[in-house]
Image 1 (spheres, helix red, strand yellow):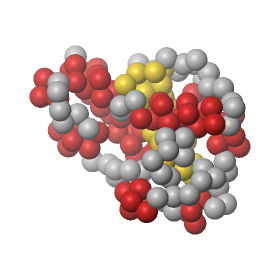
Image 2 (cartoon, one colour):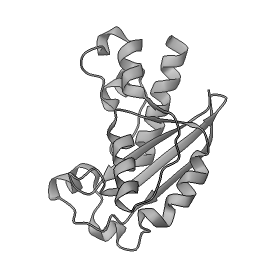
Image 3 (cartoon, one colour):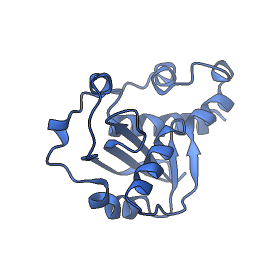
Length: 164
């Protein structure tokens, strides 16, 4: 299976306020590459959100903006299927790109939360959050770090492929 798993962290409740992006590329079911960057969202951070992921204005002060790294992101994802756990990361990335009047390529997106809900009966209606599913799969990761969350979403998809 070939895909790129993507995760983002945001500065505030505006889904376009991306402050970190992490991506992992899988080719033939094996980790082929990874990419991550802090992003200066050019907006204020909310305290409650900072407490969740630990990223602040100071963390991203000298980081690139999304338009600065968008060519790298587009090159990294190529024409691969894009994977995220719930719609949040897809919507966030699309809103952020739109905010800068840029265009995302028309890649196919796959939601690993939906895959989870269809693969394991105990997650059909609830409990399909990334941390809970990773606990079930005994996959240890650092939650709320974009690269670690992308790796976790990839592991969920790979485990579902083996199970299904």
